[in-house]
Image 1: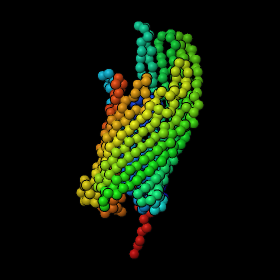
Image 2: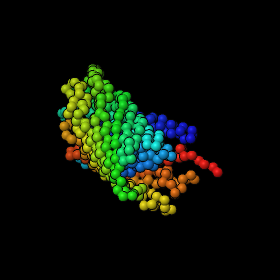
Image 3: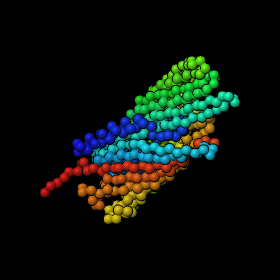
Image 4: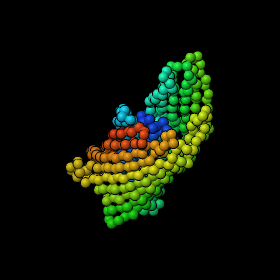
Length: 429
């Protein structure tokens, strides 16, 4: 057990260092706090992010902390995952392609008492990473080239508890520490004698998150179960100062004027709510739907306008996410491996939380297929549902808006869930 604890601790330390790197190359991550990450473990990713109204005793679901109350009493769960993606860009017939790979998450869950379960882990919240340039011609002799780049993101280390108040009702909460930030730059250059402006934006975040969840189970017959879930995430100021350094350069005289501007308490998280519903037939199949809302239109964001760096209330908008998904396992204790696999699927639609020059950003359509492949070992046979799982999912994402860059993303998520019987009492006769 000590060796396993050390290995999990090392994995979490490694993931903290890895999360410090950006997890996207999308030019849309230059807006707001960056690209919003899809949270969750292997179960959630295989169903395209479904999870508000879902609980499984053998898998971790951080999307609703009330689900921790249902974790198996004998098992310590660990879930680690990584991803790789290919992104194709298309703008007015011009195409490009990028490839990235990221360490996604580390999750754990275990039972504290008969009616209380706990969870811990590291998850991404937002990601910033892009680099491109634009050019504009002032006259026949003068062309100004502007280089845009940025990197960073926010990450969350959380602990959570879920408790079964009475048989059908569970409640839970996650408390998290978030860290990270961003560095963005807009650098202009020209070979002529005109002045060019370069702007460097930065912010560093150290704050907290607080999320609550509720799940209610309604049995239908002996094996069918209807589960309703609700979640709420507290919106609040992050206590972070945002800075903007403006450099005005005249190439003919090699002179630069620098101005540093700061906006105090500039960044904040929105209030979020979610509602989910799932219908399950034992451990054979599950179908569910989620609706989630992030109220960004109540938050301000700093921007450089007319020589001033100040907060604006018209840059962000409410974001809504709709998800359908499920999983199917023909027979988890069958001899045939293909009958023991958990087949997962999902689809979703998300509206953007930022505006681009006053225009609504690209809406997102996504679809996922996934597999939870059980791995038997000398301690776990086909008579137990608590296998280690190899979770593999493939996701297609389309970001599109009129007159803007179109993105087609193909992402592979690979995770491994360890189900360890740490709390079983062995009897020797």
